[in-house]
Every structure is written in structure tokens, then in C-alpha cells.
Image (cartoon, rainbow, N blue to C red; front, side, top):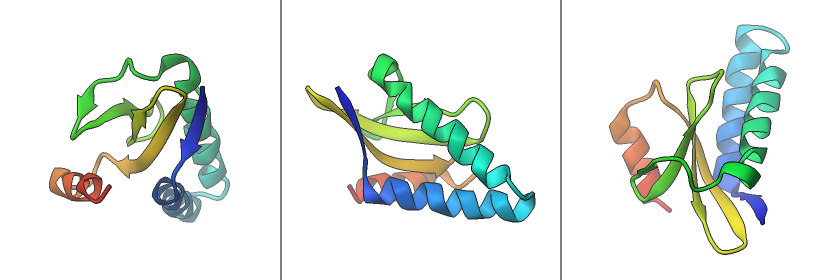
Length: 98
């Protein structure tokens, strides 16, 4: 199995990186390290997370973010990495775009 990070998910991570880097220098790097580690864990744990809006949703342990993904036979596709503090309607709209 392999993990595929789609362009929109990469944009989400980059946007969050810049947000956290503005808060405290190097916090953005810590954010990326944490989220990439959690995304890599999908190699073992993909499919165990609850489904919402047609996607599996994995919550980050350290940051208020959720990773939305779908599974196929041989891969895990990460569609979005979204801030849980934002409006649920915004999240629904974003996930309908896919």
C-alpha cells in the first residue's frame, strides 16, 4: 500500500505551516513533522477512522487538524488536511469539491 498526498492537501499543509511559523519560529516545522508522521501512520491504520462526508477522518493528536482520506485497494489518497476550528459548513463545502 502507498500514500498519495493530493495537491489540495499539500496546499492545506503549506497554509497551516505559514500560520504556525508566524506564531512562533520553527513551530511550522514541528507542525509539518507531526502531520507527516501521522499521515505516514495510515500505512498501518488506514480504514480504522470514522467516516464523515464520504471520507475517513483522522484527527491529529497535537494540532486541531483533521486528515481526510479515501482508500482504494493499493493506496490511501489524502484529499484534505483541514483546521477543525473552522466552520463545519466550510469543511463540508471543501470536501464536496472532490
